[in-house]
Length: 286
Image 1 (cartoon, one colour):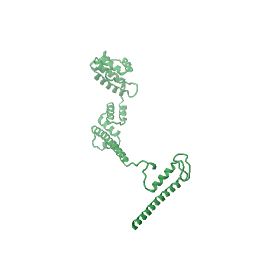
Image 2 (tube, helix red, strand yellow; image 1 turned 90 degrees about the vertical axis):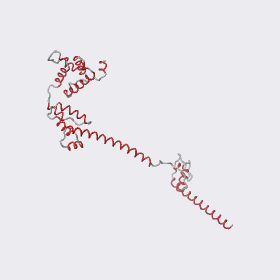
Image 3 (cartoon, rainbow, N blue to C red; image 1 turned 30 degrees about the vertical axis):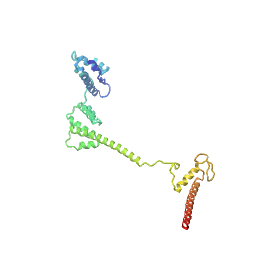
Image 4 (tube, rainbow, N blue to C red; image 1 turned 30 degrees about the horizontal axis):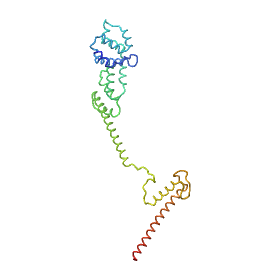
C-alpha cells in the first residue's frame, strides 16, 4: 500500500551541479526532496531507504559523487542529515557573501509581486545581511517604477511589511481597473454597432426595381431604361452587341425621352381642360 502511494507523487528533478548557480540549485532541490519524502511517507522508512530514494532522485552524477565521499564515522552513509551535509558542502565549497549580495541587488522586478518577493527572500538568506528587512525594503523601492514607486516614497517611516502591503494593493487595484475598462469597452462596442445598424443607409436598389411614381423625370428615366434594354435603340436604330448596352448618344436620347414625356403630359392636361370647358358650355347652354 505504501509503495502504491509513493508512485502517485511526482519525483523531484535531478540535482544540477554543472550549470548555473550550483548553491541555489542545491537549495531548491533539497526543498523539493524534503516535500516528496514527507508526502510519500518515506520519512517513516529506514535511513538507508531514504538515502537510496534521494540518490535515485538526484541522478547518476550525484551517485558518483556519493561513492567518492569520505565519511567521518561508519554508518553515516545511511543517515539522511549526513548526506545533505556532504552534498551541501560539495555545492558550496566557498561561500562568497559579496557575490551573493550582488546577485540580490541584481534581481529584476517581475509580476506578480509575490514571485518577486519570494526571489528576494531566497537571495537575502544567502547574503548574511545584518538588517535583512531594511535591505529588502530598499530593494523593492528601487526596483519598482512609476506610480507605485511614488506611493512608496510618499510614506513616512515605511517598513518592509508596509511596503509589501502597498505593492500588493496596487497590483490588485490595477487588475480591477483593467477588468472594468475591458468590460466598458466591450459594452461601448456593442452599443456602437447597434446604433450604426439602426441608422444604416439603405442599400442601393436598381431603378428598374424601384416603385414607379407620377413624376415626369422618373417616368422619362424608366422609359429610356426600357428602351436601352432592347437590342436596338428606338431613337437612332443603334444595334446593341450586349444586353443593356447603351448607344453612343444615350445622353441625348434620355433628354429627348424626358422632353417627349413632358410634352405628352402637357398635351393630355390641355386636352382634358378643353374637354372640360366644352362640357361646361353645353351644360350652361342647356
